[in-house]
Amino acid sequence: MLCDARRHDADSSGYLNISQVVSLVEEVLPDASPLDCAHVAAVLDMNSDTRVTLEEFMTTLEEGSAIAEAVRALLRARVHGNAV
Image 1: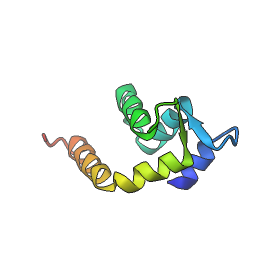
Image 2: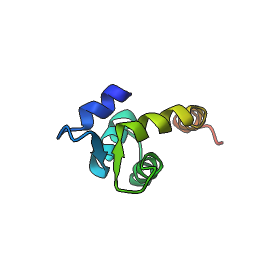
Image 3: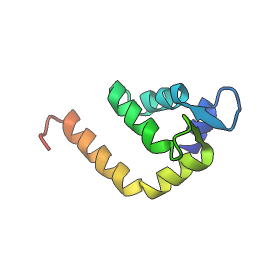
């Protein structure tokens, strides 16, 4: 996932702007809605400066792995038509 973040840092600035975060989310979760993308961007942008450093990205992923698994389970249930 860190490689994805670095790849989406198109200008090699060391951070992702909001549109780069949205692009990454849409690649990883093609069915993500604009609201889903905005939520992920807000969670990743820990200091609310409208950009996500690689440190913020990694910290959020490390701290949120249990939440991420729960979200994946919900998405899988949604794909398979199961109500949650």
